Length: 219
Image (cartoon, rainbow, N blue to C red; front, side):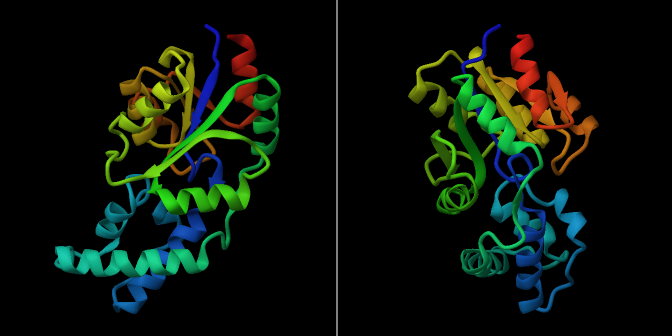
């Protein structure tokens, strides 16, 4: 098998945004006088879009549409204000992206984060590399694990799906990859664990980004 392209999830795969997401969401909860959560708990709240994040962190009895929408609006306002705070590339990502670029592997990003925020995050932290396509959550593209975004990348690059690696850190990512016909690799440095990734269709697991380069060389 010869891989020609790779699709990355963003949060929990390329960027460690756990503190950013957790801190901003807690600010929203504080504003509405709801209980906040430990930052580590956000590992299990994120991954399926901002609206689902808000719905999960709200107390029972306060998950009605108006409350969710009000909190979501404030979240997006605060996120734009604090975008990039407490965010960093995971160790080894620079080496991985340099190696993939050198090998001629085409790079793309598919995130459930709103598209404009995804593009801003990439501009802040990943501008040293050329990503062919950057796709965040858009109104006309269903969120992952629906494969629509992945299929759009496949079609735009005109590369067979079997020649794509999909690297992500959650069940949502693995299910997306499987549905799109890509090769799913689970990132163990991200937000979720080995069992979740394996149960969701991961065909390989990596503990460090550089292992992806070794995997490609072997295949």
